[in-house]
Image 1 (cartoon, rainbow, N blue to C red):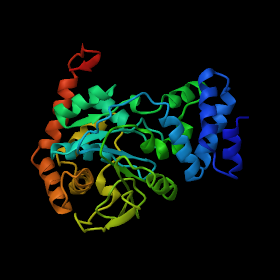
Image 2 (image 1 turned 120 degrees about the horizontal axis):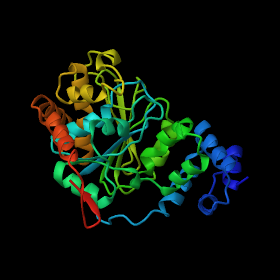
Image 3 (image 1 turned 90 degrees about the vertical axis):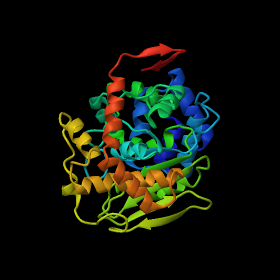
Length: 351
């Protein structure tokens, strides 16, 4: 059995970068069998290791990535959650559209459902909105719409190799690990990232990891209701990487009304009705609690990115984007444009 797996099982000391390098090398050359790949994923999904082991794991993957643009995308924020909280509609995806309609440059990363019925990728697919396939295309989409949904190219290729190695076993049983580390695996030249952490994710370990991130502003949000989004009816804590790291709170009722609860957010829509319900959220016709929730989360994107510095102004701008119709109009525009055939120019796909 590979030393990386033994180290995870014994947890006597952190698994170092060289050990992880060896694991990926053997995975790549085919000398690592399916049983060992399953054992590694099972161990990570059962109990996440110490943050040093996770940092070495992430670094060992990062050094294998193809080169990405050296220049950062100014004022751009990535929004991605850990999943696993109470089942609601796709709040972070809705807040991405609302923030973009309010002038924030937003990239949304995510996945298909692991612990929910409908992940962000599943929803976008049903809406007819395509994921980008390269940094060039992502940047072009950002310039055109102010929002882009990054595809699998931002994640390490080794994860795809793991999935192929364990096939026909699905990766869904390992969702806890994939959800928790997913926000740290996406490689994008953004200047900020907002990641919601649900009660099912290891907040302490993720905070330690966040403290080692120096190339972007990183916010981890959590609340006393266990959701991986900010809630007007909950006390929310925002953990920042900053200099030495810190935190601040957004209390229930502080920025938006505290009335309502999860039942008032509307259903975690079934796949068939999800697109219509999602568009009703963007249009402000899915109820006041849903509107306030997406606006609060959109405000966080505006402040984290530096687009606005005042939270009250950020909430007001988000509300205007919803009630004035800009948020839904943006989603409808992207859908309509991407319904047209792709034209390839210079190796990149354009609408």
